[in-house]
Every structure is written in C-alpha cells, then in structure tokens.
Image 1 (cartoon, rainbow, N blue to C red):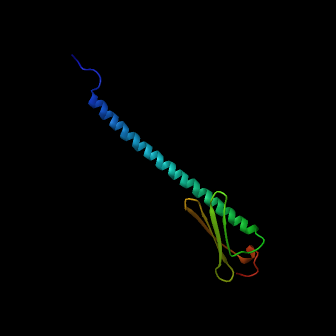
Image 2 (spheres, rainbow, N blue to C red):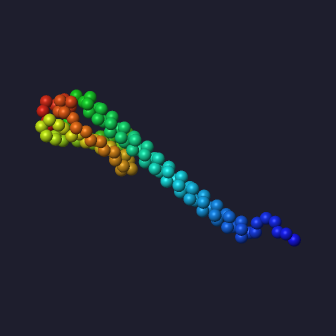
Image 3 (tube, one colour):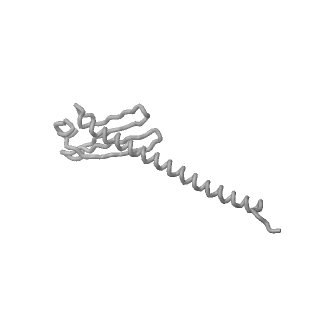
Length: 119
C-alpha cells in the first residue's frame, strides 16, 4: 500500500517554518511603519521650524528669545545671538511630544529683523 499526503510531523515542521517566516515579516512591517512615522514627524517639525522663521520676518519687533507650545503638544524655541557686528544667528528648535527635535539655524542682518544695530 502506497502512502499519500503528509505525516503529522511533516505538517508540524511546515507550520513552524511558516510561523517563523510570518513573524519575521510582521517585525519588518512594524519597523518600517515606525520609521515612516518618525520620518513624517521630522517633516512636520521641519515645516514648523521653517514657518517660525517666516513668522520671524513678519514680526513687528525684535525679541532675542521666544518660546511657545502648539495645540498638538509641539514646543518650539527661537534664540537670536549676535555673531559679530553685522550678523545675528537665529536658532529654531522644534520638539514633538515624543522628544524628537528638528533644529534650523540661519544668519540674518540686523536690518532684516527690524533692528537698527545688533542686539
């Protein structure tokens, strides 16, 4: 009599191999989802920092340090430090609720900030 089909042991081995492969794929998917979320958060923080720099150009008066909190829990900080007689360094740091930061830095002339002379 010839034997047809799989034995119980062969079926169990196949299930173990399938389970291990499935777990590896799920872990890969999970890591890629976390990496995408972190990347999207970086893009949002960078856009917020850029908009703060634009808002700074539109501000009616000079403030050497500013801090704030957005409704979504994101915090931001702007500091301005003179670098020589004719330049001001502007640092913008945006931090999300998870503690991840985006940092932008630029140099401006005092006249661009509505200042007559450096601070």
